[in-house]
Image (cartoon, rainbow, N blue to C red; front, side, top):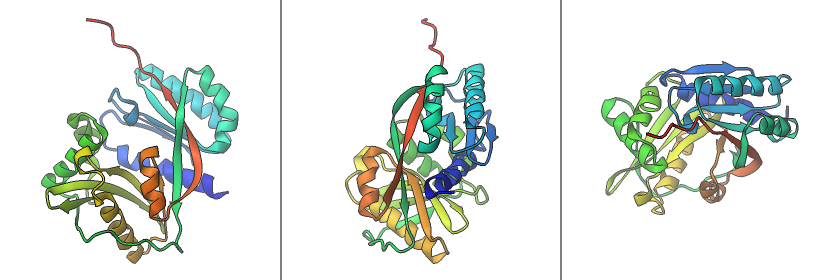
Length: 257
């Protein structure tokens, strides 16, 4: 298995871990594909990841059928290998190509320069979980009640995903989540509200978290970046592995009042 497909396989597990406590959660998985649907009518909380799998086409067809059956929009990410054969199928099923998500990796031999010293705490307990949820909602412009139902509930000691908050002079300023798998760790939900961006807090948080995980035995880190975040991650030593095609299935249009 090449590295891109290996990382896709690891990425398959991250949303399953993060979404498992969401309302109306429904998960379907193979080794290289995962569909996660919730009761939320937002594509960000109804996700499909497709890697190189012998039944990737069948999985895609069943996933779209199930999303339509539940009346949910769907955000789908494909590995480049899977996309070669699945793009025509996706179009036929009603999905629209909307861009690409950079898949990036930080290798064990890359030294990460630390950011400024910053207070970092793990989001555990009602107060800290609420603070992390507030930051995520503000950063991604997502209704706070949706974050509470889908994200807050997964911030527990044993959930398999760990969330950290960075404090600055103005209080809590950004947050990030990590999903460790053996000696590899996935970085997700890097969230800095607009009023705290370009102050170096995201860099400070991420470099300290990476250093801590390296001390705990993690050797490699991966993430799916946005175009806006690509420059930050590249400056820390993450390199592009592949641009993953992103597709969207629109949900039903509400009837007018």
